[in-house]
Image (cartoon, rainbow, N blue to C red; front, top):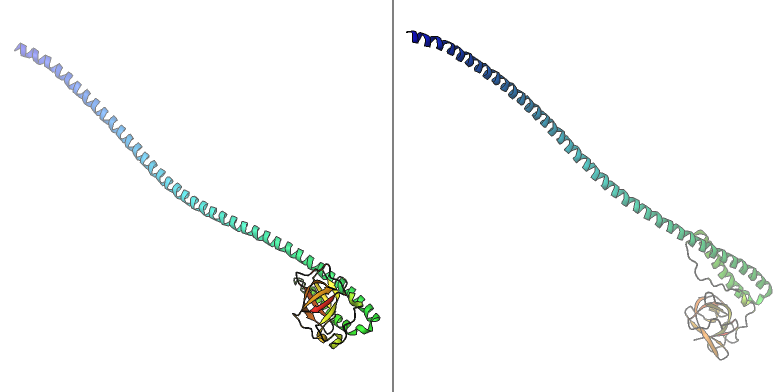
Length: 275
């Protein structure tokens, strides 16, 4: 009985210690569990916060991508407009250069035509002066003077036309460097109508213009002359060339020198003979 009593007395403290230890272990477990839960909750809060920040970053990234796309589209349009503007500028510069060259050529052409018109006017004035002197000196050349006045009228008409339309080119005008050198032409041969013989049609050179390669002969409509008729120019036995009739008046005619003619050797008074 005593042993049992002692064993019981010893067991009671042990049980108390075990109970205390159990309670301590339980308390520690509870504390640890609470700490673990708090840590888990903190981690969950951090995770939620990170997810929210991630969603916000994704939204901002989407906005940046859209903004980038819009900027790239605007940049592409701006480049296209720049290329188009450069093309238009190049065309405008080329058009301006072309217009400048055209204006320069036009001014040069007007300058040349103005000089030509002035020269023709001077020639016309000289022709009028010499014509008046010729009329006073030679009454026997009345018909030839009439033809010359007709030619002078045509010349003045061309001058007026050129004055009104400065872009028209001057035609060959039958005016020589000494347009009235026929003031004393040799007489027409006797025998044929108007003074020519019944044989081959013959006459003489009364004017030669080496600038435009033509001659004036003392043969005309009254001698049966026609446009297109060809004449041989001779001096004695020497053949100086050939001429083709281009204009015919009553007592005079203008004929262009053909290429094989020796125009530098032909003189007023040389004979002409119909071919």
